[in-house]
Length: 160
Image (tube, rainbow, N blue to C red; front, side, top):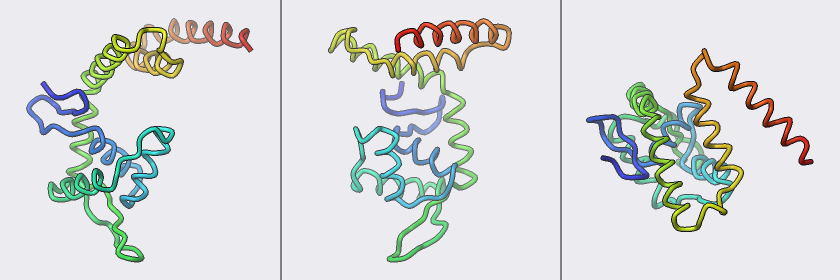
């Protein structure tokens, strides 16, 4: 069993959430450590920005494992990292286990509800859960899911 904030395919190496995000982000395009820090800040709306002391050891470890590589050294020795083929394969393997990751998110959500009470569930959390459920909708049920979402949108528009 992996930790709540770690991810691993069965029998595979455990990866932390930040390492998983680094691999995901570098799949989009090469970036510097500073750019990765800024991106995490934007994605979390400023709630969490890891320190350099947290990110750079992860970058070093991923590089040592051959999952990322320095693609370019810019001004002032700024390292631009890129995902390697091995890194892409690792990311694909981890993403293939998204059901387990979703289950972890729901477990964390349950702990937060236990601590703070159900009244503190935010609209974003509900939307996130709806999105996760939509990932599992089969093609046979897609029309029914669209109809449900259209009905929800109609009801929400009435609240404006």
